Image (cartoon, rainbow, N blue to C red; front, side, top):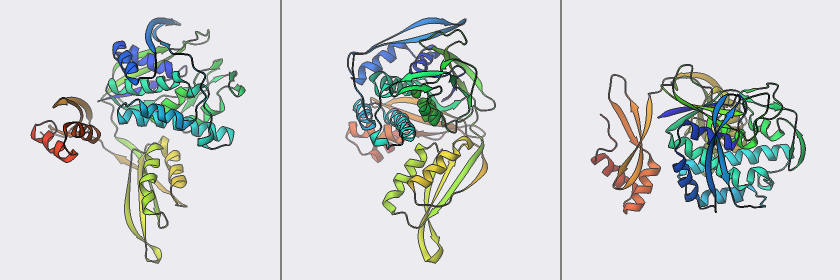
Length: 388
């Protein structure tokens, strides 16, 4: 299990992210096969080495069929769900486009359902997001962090007209995420790049100490004079997730029980590390529910907003807490012909705890004609997931 640090010192975009993953070691053949399996048409994927102010970078080459499609969020979600990618890839990709729709809706004073995607709804943006998320997981990254994001200056032409840099939707997307304002002319961070950083990192800063494994540079299309136009990604290990977290808590006695799962998901989508619900006895002998979430300090405002918007509470308590987390890694094993991800946690004093990912167990069970519990017990019996 690795961590991945986004270092957008000159900004970020979807194609720069995919290119940086290739430079980091993601095999081009794997990426070509992944794109072919998406079944989104005749899409050709390549890469080339380029120089950006003395830095050797990889640049993504993507050839797509011509299209003139302006999509809404539900169109994009349908395309993503139709690709049949793994659930965690699908969910992260949908989250990125949902964040895009929410930012556009806030800028234009409309609703998410009415937002009309232009550039960010095009097929190349969809492919960039899916490849970025899938590539991160393929390299073994399960924790994501970001350094301050470069904004840029000046003006940019977009579908809606002539806008200042950073475009309004980009600034909305980067709410709660550290940014920097170097005197770089032009657009540094695109909406797709901002959405990926937000969906993957939630604004989490890198660990104080870590061991770099390797890094990669993804080149942008342009080669401006004032900066090396590239995104750096750093694959790390040994970064501790221990440290300060925020505990957020809200009690509600007027939330119908069937809406509790939706509230929990909204809180997780907003960047919470974990979220639980428990029954509580409230004043006037009312039965209520207590929602408690854990989040990194940078995600507190977003998680708090989700509690207000997706729940019925009129107040949220929060405080800082410290936590210790066991070192972890994710392995993929083949069991009866099925790929199963196994999370392994190193225990104090030696030994480890292993846990198979439920989504993979359930998928394997369906293909093998078993129910998930039978498959889980068989995994234990075969020694795939056990404590040592």
